[in-house]
Image 1 (cartoon, rainbow, N blue to C red):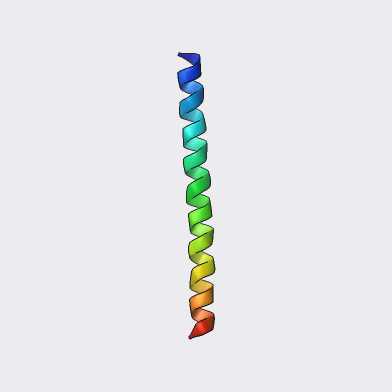
Image 2 (tube, rainbow, N blue to C red):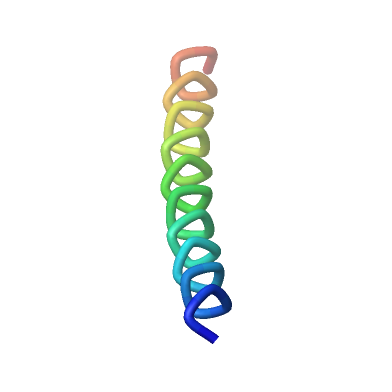
Length: 37
């Protein structure tokens, strides 16, 4: 049970990390697109 909880917490952490990376990548892409205009 303890291990299962640990895995779930780790999964939530990874999801948050991925969402943050995606947001940063999206922002960088938008800045680049604006620069191209």
